[in-house]
Length: 297
Ligand code: ATP
Image 1 (cartoon, rainbow, N blue to C red):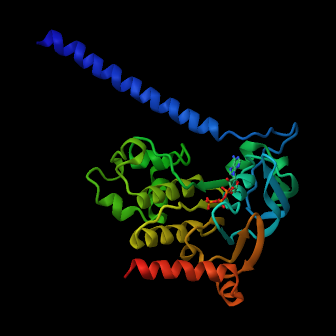
Image 2: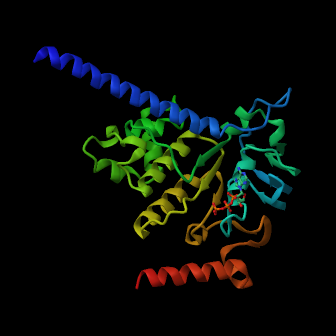
Image 3: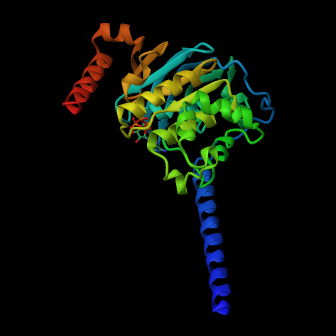
C-alpha cells in the first residue's frame, strides 16, 4: 500500500506544481498584454512626481484610425477628485491608459506636476499612480499578502492601516484565519465588493500621490456599493483622485465631473451644477434613478 501511496502522493505534488506554474504563466501573459507600447526618452526623468496635479491639454487619440478622444482638456489640482462619466465606449478608460502612458497621445499633452508624462521614465510615472482596476487580479495567497502586493516592503502596521482605510477590518475579523485566510484561485472566495476593497487597500499601500479608480461595470448590491464608496472616500484623502464611474451615485462628491460623449467633453461641473444644466448628465442621472426605483420595486 505504502509503495502505491508514495508515487501517488508524488504525482499529486507534481500536478499542484504544474498547476501553480501554469497560473504563473497565465499571470505573466496578463502582465505582458498590458505592457506599454512606448519607450523611455534617453534622458527620461527618474524622480517620480510627488504632488500629483494632473493636466490634460487638448488631448486627441485614435486606435486603428478610429478617433477615440478629441481635444480633451481638464485640470485636476493636487488633492482634488475628478470623475469621468459617459456612455459605454465614450473613451473613459482610454483616459486612464493615456495617463499611465500605455500609449502616447496623437496631439496635445498630459502633465503631472507640470512634467509631460513622455519626459518621465515609465517607472517614475508608474510609481506616482496607484490604480484600482475594474478586474483586480488576486493570487491564491492570504489577504495580507494580496494587499502587500501594493508595496512589497510595507510593514504589518502599514498593511493594517490600509485595511482600515479600505473598510475591510470587520470583514477580515469575521474570517477564520483573519488576514491570513487564503482568497482562493483568483480571489474566488471573495465577493466582487470585497475584492474591490482589497484592491483599494493595495492601492493605498502603494503610497502614490495619484489614485485612479476604474469602477467595475458589474452591479453590486447597495450595501457593497456603500462599503466601496466609504472605502474610496477615505482612501482618496490626501490623494489626487481620478474616478471612471459607471454608477453616478459614486461621484456625487467629486470636485469636478467631466461628461464624455464620443470622445469629447460635452459638459463639466459639479454634480449640482450638472443637474441644473439639464443636459446629458442630468439625463443619465434620471435614467439610473428610474432603474434603481424599478429594482427596489
Ligand atoms: P466602458 O464604459 O464600456 O468601459 P469606455 O468609455 O471606458 O467604455 P474605452 O474603453 O475608453 O471606453 O474605449 C473607447 C473606444 O475605444 C471603444 O469603442 C473601444 O472599443 C475602443 N478600444 C478600446 N481599446 C482598444 C484597443 N486596444 N484597440 C482598438 N480599439 C479599442
